[in-house]
Image 1 (cartoon, rainbow, N blue to C red):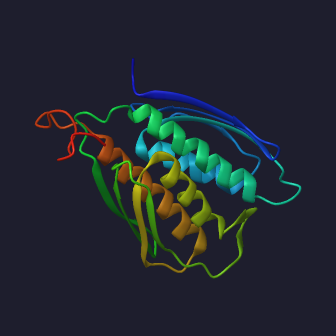
Image 2: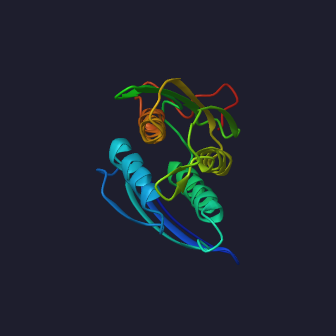
Image 3: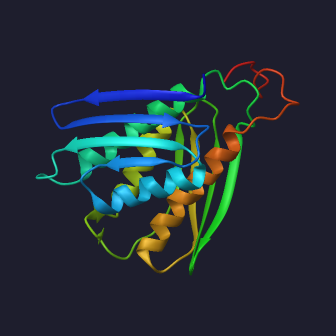
Length: 195
């Protein structure tokens, strides 16, 4: 049995399901009703080498907020469940990822203690049909649902599409690193004995 999870969540605003395999090859099947968000989730899965299926039906007639935030919640729950007891994993991951003129740093700790430090700046309110302010809400939801201490920092950038995409890819690479196994680690990498 691999490190896999299936999570479904239905509210009065959204109906979302996520199937995640942390030890995949980057295969995706994603439909959120938000084209740019689909592209970002696809980039996350492909660059983290996670198999990811996302089906999200939300109240897009209102706006994109509930769909993006709730997808973040469900994805975070799936990451937490699939990671299991975290025995033998490296726990920490980091990536400084370039995308053309943009450069984004992501560092994270699968500590079980959620925290988001976020320093990304955007010059437009939307990229396609995606509200740029929702980048923060998405990563906040993922970090708190998964129990990840997550730092995202823009080191350089002008193009909003590039900044957002670099953020999703950097998160993917850092998460993949943190979830990697090290044969020298007995149990979990913590003085407490649990994560």
